[in-house]
Image 1 (cartoon, rainbow, N blue to C red):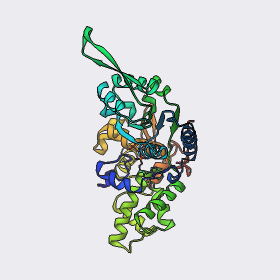
Image 2 (image 1 turned 180 degrees about the horizontal axis):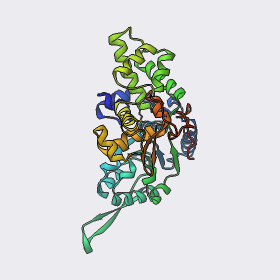
Image 3 (image 1 turned 135 degrees about the horizontal axis):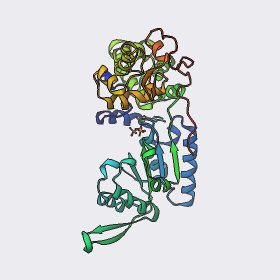
Image 4 (image 1 turned 90 degrees about the vertical axis):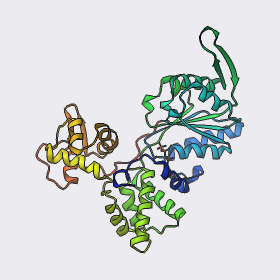
Length: 354
Ligand SMILES: Nc1ncnc2c1ncn2[C@@H]1O[C@H](COP(=O)(O)OP(=O)(O)OP(=O)(O)O)[C@@H](O)[C@H]1O
């Protein structure tokens, strides 16, 4: 993996196996997100007492925070089977009909990126969710016939990184909606200690603090950085993940003290050095760092904005005072956000939606 995507919250296929090793299997192994955990616990226990499948569950939140993990945990807690698919994989209503009619009673159907499901399939999903029945249309034009098929009672777990893109009727069919938020550094430290224990890697508290602080509030990134620091510790040191090995390894991988990678820093440096802090338009900024505007907007900016380093204003992108300071430059008078330094509680959980 190159330095460029060390801190991406997205997962590559090659990384999935590494992730599976440390993935929590049960609710009580799932670190933090206490409110969501507690609510899910009640939902699942209530359903089990009644002997019927729980309401459909929608999990929303940025990538890498544990939505897939929770979907698997729901099935494990219920003692049910799980079928896994994703919105983009369901192109036609027939694809969805084939999946839902093959579910066994009480199964969990996990649909990742559910906001990307094709419209005709989405409409079929409504009746599967609500009435446990689907009408499969055979033929075309005036000769078309709808064949009703029964679906065994099941629980849909939908995951989305863009809950705002879900249609109203879709959202209304979920009886429980949980929003996962970024993890605090303390939560990520606990997560790193757990992962290190499972991987058999000795880790000190200082080592965990150092990695947690660079993980952008995201378990996936924390686990990935831990694996890279482990490599460094085993190859170039005594195998222990501590402050020194963490700092040295993350320097090798170009992940700085705030968790910014080379491209994030290139964006900030261009803003500050070439455009005196901005405002500058997205496409000009993207040309300056040799990237596509989409990449700058979707990969770099969300974190830079959240970290209080970059602001999107009607006149263009602006580097905040914290950005100047992070790059070791003196901000000129009147710099945007002069009153705000990078908030120490950057990743503390915002209120979750019940
Ligand atoms: N609360 C947690 N406790 C322990 N490990 C966690 C937790 N949340 C996530 N992880 C770990 O982080 C990794 C990413 O989690 P997961 O795949 O569930 O994220 P996701 O939100 O589904 O991401 P995506 O949106 O990309 O599918 C997994 O290896 C998982 O083990």
